[in-house]
Length: 598
Ligand SMILES: [Zn+2]
Image (cartoon, rainbow, N blue to C red; front, side):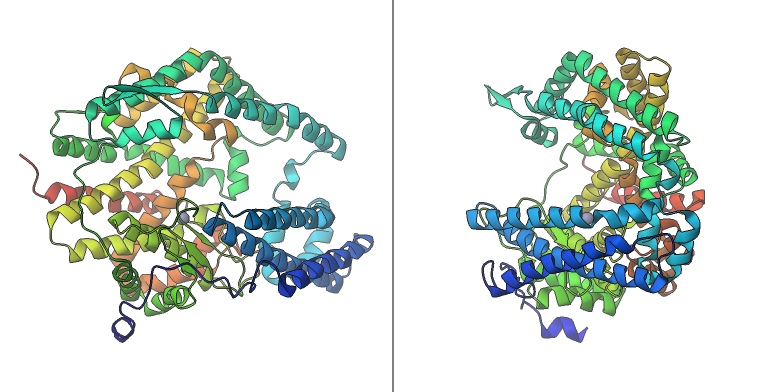
């Protein structure tokens, strides 16, 4: 591990460099790029007259290249504006620049939209004649046509678009307006305070069990009170979803719409949800274990996210960077050197600074640019894991940088593969290196809480949605839906948790149910997929790596099913998904093996 020793402690917690994009916000480089966007759009507009059934493949290829070139440049400008903004959100000059670029980007999009529309509607024969020259853009072009079998006549589509604005979209706006006005009251230290939802939710993780319960009770009190209104909004949304997608567009079921957007076969989603349901007892076992650590007979639902004694171990930034890179190195030196490249280029802003955007992200702008990472690094175990997560995203993008700007980045079901896998590598490393039980316990509880929140909880959400959509079509009342939700919780938690009656109203406050029906299963899909891959890695060692790297290198150049199939993975196999739960079981067993409190 020469590399590691040579550069030890050399990485500073500093702002990033954006030099690879443009030298400054104002200046000739940006001005020239803006002028070039206009020129490229104007040239592209001349193609409109040439689009025809008998379009020459060579001309088609030329149009695709021109499109790609335009997208690259707009992404570069947009990325530059966004990165500046996220690093200094209160700067008015940057805000103005970003707004200007967003406007430019929207205009470029509108003025070139005719090409995508033409391609979407092109007849099958002409499309299959042109597709072979698309090269790396083949899958991108295919996804544009996925909706074609479900597309109505132009006149019908126009009516739907027009009516959507003041129909379902208006309902969603109403939902947001209504719910963001809610004020939640909670007594903290003897003083009654008013909170918004986010502020209230902080208390779900509070060490004081009374306060945790009170925070949940206040949230659910409001949902119950508002149920007659919110429940109606939900029913309208669900009926509209069915009317448009199943009755008019002929999708086979309400969930099939989402599956098509994710490009995941219906059957695979069914299998995923079945396996999640069959493994509910595993999370129940974890909750019993957690009860023991918290010193209670049985956990209440209020205690699900209760903290189990924090550790105060802190990781200095340079040490964390080396720890992450070293765990990547142990997996594969090539992966580690890609990760190191991000730091060597000074593309990581890890500083703690006022005005910086909250949270963490990795931004990939294009195949010719090393991604950028933003994080507010505070030295906790969580921060080390987040750093690994974002660096995993960067490695994913770099491994796929031989693709086009439109196919480099993985689609939703595979988007979190490298990031979550990287977190697992670092977690294992921390567990291997820390014989002290406090750190081991902190790392494992953290992993298990995440596994539950992304897999168990989201899968049961999707199961609820599936039944709720059916019930509403059969005329279910709001109370019927709350009863359905209570049964869903009973099925999920069994005897392991005491679920009070107020939780039957929880579903009314889940924004995804309203805004993006069935979106939630993607979280379970992504996380379980990675656990399952990790299990294969543990079993196969070296032999697994080329297959894993092939998945990452594919980026977004093919459908998730094809990319996984090429790596020898069968999404249709129960065993594959079960493998993910085996990893979770192992974590539970490790926790069980730790000496327990008396
Ligand atoms: Zn991520």
